[in-house]
Image 1 (cartoon, rainbow, N blue to C red):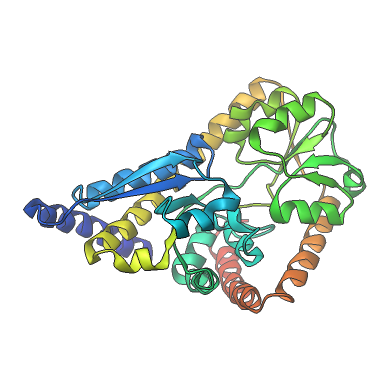
Image 2 (image 1 turned 90 degrees about the horizontal axis):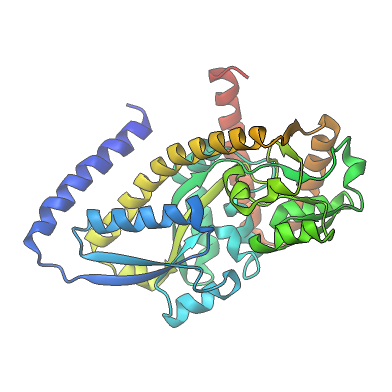
Length: 345
């Protein structure tokens, strides 16, 4: 039986058994505060969906209250350690300032699609590699979903080749920004609400932010006319719940099981809902006259070469990242072989 069917069957059985056990009402209700670092639309919705599933699967004995960006990315570790919040919903990439080795676990250039990222994290050794990195901070995370590829970038004028990136003022983030800088781009890490004003003020002439559906919410299409694909900088956006290690260890078996099962259900939910959101967003863009482009081949080649330089620099500085990266490459070799044989290119 395929592993995803086993997982689904186990989740359904678990849901039934948890509902039955909680009917006794013997377990005291535990209340957690969870800070969401993600944009409320779709990203944030996934956190709310997860919290609702935890409550359901625990029979109401574990209640997670979701707070939208109560604590900023860079304050997350301190907020968790102090007890200001009990958990954080987001991606490991949000914590690149505290530990750069976490960046690849938030999605990375020319990485796997959501299905591939999920396979790596669930069965291919990714979760263990991430555990080793978070352990040096006394933290524990669980993989809880993966959203589709981002758009490759919004531009005010079409891109003919890699030379067009040289000197270009562009909003970008994380590994994507570092890769673009290798090609001469001037990359700025602007928050969501400042991207459109920056275009209108002539401070930037290009931007990559998120999924097309979220870019649509921000009105970026209204001030630019050209959207490029694929989203090479982040083909998947993995989601996680992050907590202090000792908090996870202190949970009852039932609550740990409920959280794990809720993550599995959220993985399935994000895989279906997020895709339809992108289909609808592209339809809106076309209706508004936005031109949808494919990256010039020479540009993608140059971007990939720059990415290889960036990841080589980082793995040379951190042995845990080097281990994680080598394990990913081993997984990717087998995954690519399977994809090429099993599906039409």
